[in-house]
Length: 232
Image 1 (cartoon, one colour):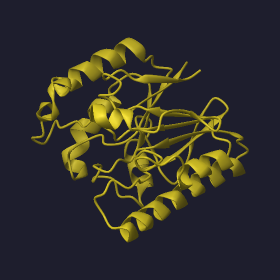
Image 2 (tube, rainbow, N blue to C red):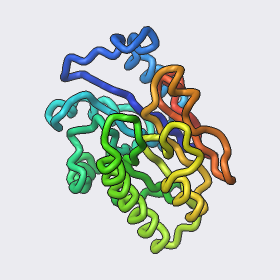
Image 3 (tube, rainbow, N blue to C red):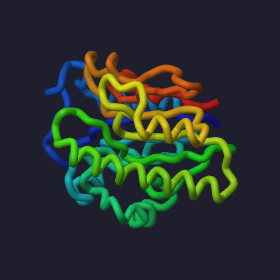
């Protein structure tokens, strides 16, 4: 039994959004994901998928993509990404009810792996695309969701945490942020995130061990579409 993570599957079984327009690495990426997934993941394993699951904007347009994910081996825990428009942010419970026993959705709640609590939310970082006011508003909202997940896990008696985000925990060039400080405050062992694509973003991302926490980038193209083992 092991815990894995991967993000940014960007599936498009019901909409016309071929990913190879973003570079040769994305050619036949669904086949690559499926091949590596089935080689690595056993039914008893858990995989956290850190957002951007589908290009569909409504659940009806995403259903085939979510069913495709559900058909893969292992327990799948999904995080909300910036492109996951099908996800009603305040009604995650609806997705958990609809896909009960097949997919689990992580937001305003927590899941467990062995003696770890898995907490997470979309997160947010500054990418130069919005005003500072809007950036701070969204970041505060996502931090509140993450606090809620931590508090639920702590109230349930958990003392070991893994934190999952879609966005990087810091804006480009930052060495700390409210998300990294929160991770340090709760004694998180690892922070796992995705969202970043392309060589330039891979190597300006926040990675490695900082203040005792391991930061890991798991964008699917960065991983060459191979789920990354997180534990044990």
